[in-house]
Image (tube, rainbow, N blue to C red):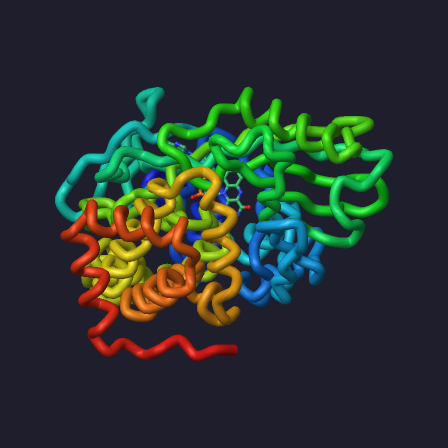
Length: 413
Ligand SMILES: Cc1cc2nc3c(=O)[nH]c(=O)nc-3n(C[C@H](O)[C@H](O)[C@H](O)COP(=O)(O)OP(=O)(O)OC[C@H]3O[C@@H](n4cnc5c(N)ncnc54)[C@H](O)[C@@H]3O)c2cc1C
């Protein structure tokens, strides 16, 4: 459907974050145009999230929720006692679109660039289209389009190869999900990869060989071969493969500098640098961001500035420095130390490891959690962690200063 060429807000991208923000803005009475290379289509990736990270309205979009959630850093599982959800992407899209009012217009196209025209922005499409809007939001995914993400240490990637399949014998405990399974038969430890897996019901399982973060990223052929070798070695090869998935995205983006257009979602560096999670964050933040944009437009103030202030306040920029220090430490660990690192990580009080994975945790508590992790990590992990910190004295000093600044402690749950 084509309407007027001008909108209050033009959102580039029809992924979960672009759609969440566009529909939240339309619900507030703004005229919003989504420009994406495709019509509204269920998001193609397998999205998981901690149930308590999702906004309440999205709980109804869970295809499945597991309470038996496990991590293996050795032969015995560590139960995580935190329900984990698989999103039903068609339900999520329908729910988001159903939450928008008439003010949403979806245009199939690809944005090339934007231009300043005084009180409005001119947006150019790759096929010569021209739209105008009061505000442009780049939600075009990892790396961004209008404001490319900076990777000061060069991009480090999360990669994974997964498949949904029928199995004669269960590859994981029926009824469970394995958030991270670092067990190997000892023959293929480098580079380190783990199994992320879910029982989908009956004889169907989703199994994915994952490299949490690597520079350069672990390639697809190796992950695919390792997944099949792992399943064969366990005596649980798939009987019938129903679908496959390739995951690859950069993890260690710097906090973006505020720019002439706003960005959101993966394009705004919101991917968590340690876990790679982002979808739940964006579904939550879309509402606050929409309020800030709407409020600024009503008040006649700058919605770009208001938006960047919501997404990247100084406290979150400081927290990103601490997370990037953690990324450098992870990248510096020898392959066989990773399971030990995560054993120590999941031995932290649940409130602390959960806070470490929470994008909203300020730098002070984050740095304290890292120091505690350092203190209780075994010697084989501590040395490489210390070397990683010392290799980046600027970032380390900032992180440590933040730790002692007296920010509130994270309480144990
Ligand atoms: C396979 C995979 C699995 C993942 N699993 C999880 C998970 O389980 N949990 C989690 O939290 N995160 C996960 N992530 C990480 C991340 O959260 C996702 O990448 C998420 O899709 C990012 O959402 P987004 O809307 O910001 O970007 P995207 O989903 O990448 O959407 C970008 C949109 O912009 C459009 N676009 C691109 N360029 C332009 C342009 N120039 N003009 C207009 N439109 C454009 C695209 O067509 C698309 O519609 C996963 C990533 C991948 C790749």
